[in-house]
Amino acid sequence: MSPVTIETKRPQLAHLSAQLDDLRARGTYFRLRVLDDEQAAVCHYDGREVINLASNNYLGLCNHPKLREAAIAATEKYGVGSGAVRTIAGTMRIHMELEEKIAAFKGVEACVVFQSGFAANAGTVSSILGKEDFILSDELNHASIIDGARLSRAKIKVFRHKDVAHAEELLKEIQNEPGRKLVITDGVFSMDGDIGPVKQLCDLCDKYGAIMMVDDAHASGVLGRNGRGSVDHFGCTQRVDVQVGTLSKAIGALGGYVCGSRDLIDYLYHRARPFLFSTSHPPSVAATCIAAFDLLEREPERIERLWSNTRYFQEQLKTAGFDIGGKTTPASETPITPILIGDGRKTMEFSRALFEQGLMATGIAFPTVPEGKARIRCIMTSEHTRGQIDRALETLTTTAKRMEIL
Image (cartoon, rainbow, N blue to C red; front, side, top):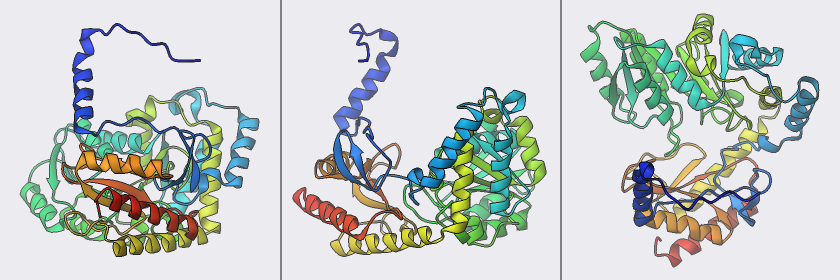
């Protein structure tokens, strides 16, 4: 069925149309690319076969046969939906099994699953703090952390990116103020791919009695033993009070989670608004995630392939002359690989040109990243073959030269 087109525009939302016109004038307006088949290393967007460098499907689990089987079996046994929020009638045994599985994997007492990683961050920060408290947040933390901090009504202090000395200065300023202090960092920063200073910030929190929180969305399945994340990577499991993760990236499905003490999780059951007011996951999704954590334990070679592909891809990009960070932006330390262009219009034109040549590599511009730091954001996966990577590199290089980017 075709969408209905209504010709008459009401003036009440004219300001939105004006802002969209401004995006078009800047050259940063985009339309959604539509995936026609599986989220895979090579797939079809808008009817065109492309090598996919834009997906968060780090380990290829979106399409794994074991996850498909788990989803189908759970649907046949439990149906397609839970029918309610968790606190009323929507907590199914399979939801509890998933939370127990994640807690055991992370080596903590308990876990609560949210509908998304965004909801996990925003719901947790906003519920465990109040207006008398303080939040110290890295300037490049994810938007969900920023929104959660605002919703909490706590006083927000922003420290320079990964600048532990600056974080300590801010803690010293407020150490005698009433209220709790919470320090938050991403484990892996989603736009530059660098790793947060988790251990050093844990040291600060121990010194000043602050709560330590890490968003490990892009570290889960990538860093640490069998993909346990940056907290495990730094050996800080018992020093981080709140661990946030996602089920939507390396795990291959949908959702977010928070790990920590039993009391933390019980409190979130009672007070986290996204948990209280959102219907729980379909049983197929919960079953899929359980199967994914089993695979992380059994198939560590997926993570090894991911890192082998990442090292090769980044080395070749550097050799070709691309700026992939480390000059005016942080250097990538993970499979997230930004190709810095700078100008937003040029970046989006480059992205469209790459697509026409069979490469899905998304342009990212302001306000997602600062003005002047627009980039093509590439993510390597375990499922890319060396031949596919080489073809992607050739397309990137020839197109960049033709457009005088290189």
